[in-house]
Image (cartoon, rainbow, N blue to C red; front, side, top):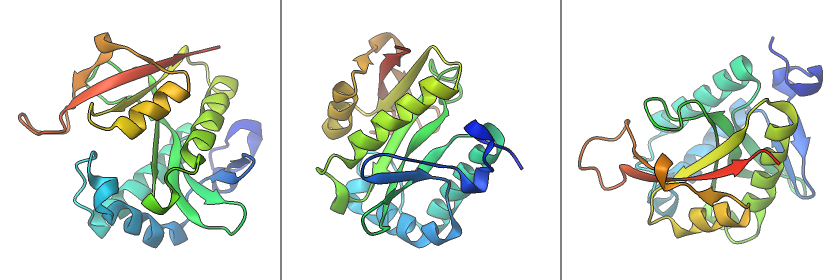
Length: 189
């Protein structure tokens, strides 16, 4: 079994923030993750259909990434009550794009958890983890121009817009309204 930083088994991978546990995925996360992915406001800028199959496939990809790389878009759990909030973490940049050789940070929380600082708390901790545990010169984040909430978080994290790294997402068909992505960068401190 692959090991994360500190030698702990991937299945037990976790670190904490003041209010959150950032951890490896569990099978029990499948239902709550699907419910989040089914929310119209969550799907709005992602191009998701909101199907169970789509959510299960995404969860399996995260588990595979954790096993192979030691990182992924990790599950977020609230310490106070064990609630599953969504995810935040790190993955390789989008293939066939200007960020394919970079490390990408991403987040997705259920709407009930928006506006409470959870995404910022988790993303800040994930950036710290990346720079402490991985030999990367920078971390990138992407979104569509219309996603002002996500772009605002990128700015609050100290990420800078890099128009030279903007791109048309290769997984979306030509003409798709969400195909154009903007890129922000956080350089290693």
